[in-house]
Length: 209
Length: 193
Image 1 (cartoon, rainbow over the protein chains, first blue to last red):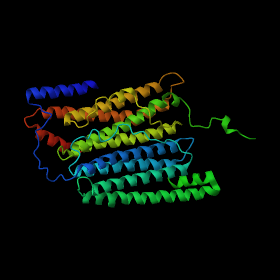
Image 2 (image 1 turned 60 degrees about the vertical axis):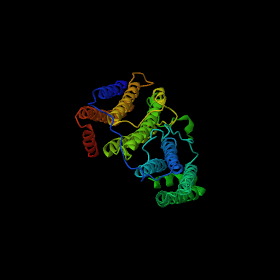
Image 3 (image 1 turned 45 degrees about the horizontal axis):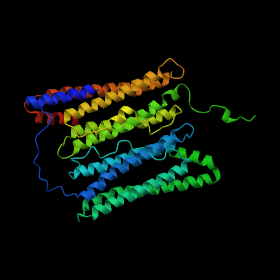
Image 4 (image 1 turned 30 degrees about the horizontal axis):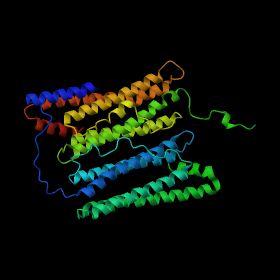
């Protein structure tokens, strides 16, 4: 495996010598005037990408927990695995936005920390996991608001109208709808379990499938 | 008659899942690590300076695949009565972190990197398979080896072949008088795959 990397290195170094096979291309001269995002805002956005992926891995742990044979709640597992992939999609949407604005031309390698280990990996029951999910969404919402705040008003005194509009109209929109949905689920499940306990959770789980 | 459930083994565990559970958990985490790395590689190709949508599509696809396979592997582990542990990463993969790995690579290097990653994943599957095929009741588990064969081996074979083919094409194409044009055309080709 290392030999492949070495072979490529070799091919490239021969290339530099012979000037025939080149891996690099010439420096580009593209006007920079259109690049108008400011650092405080860019850095907030970069950090938010990792936040979304952290949330994704936390949902992944929930999906794994409810998949266990001793827990056996396939409906909950599906809900959480889907949520994990959705959070990943959010991260990708933020990346796409920065790319659209001409960012991420450098320091891409340090954008995501390598191993985002989830903090909690087991839950007493479905309700407690749903409550954790709702809390998680609330912190994500708060962090998106922080990004908006910084991108609207910052030390560079630059209001990034378009990004602020995108985060408000697209991301917050989804956050608030998602939170309402989770809160409703917590409510229904808790009421179901008041009299019927385990049976309530069993029935609710199948509804999620 | 009162049946005490604590005395009966009511879990889904049978065979040798315990023997390979940690290897499978590690394998899941490696999938997620690779998925993020591929995402970074895709991101690099999607910036306006690189502007290679074909390469972006290739790496994004690999990122999506490793992500999906990671989830499916968790589901598999739990199907066999196991559980997931997100902390396990092999020392080889941890060692890669030394010296800040770079995912902003030139075209040929990036495909070589992907080929390298895919071969590592394939060899890891071989290793787990070998554990599960040992003729020792603690390890022998034909269901696990068969699952790995069906869900991973053929797919990995095809990806490795495809990427190796790309490196051959690219090395040949880059050795032509106008390699900028060659890269443009190759990127266009990747976009249509």
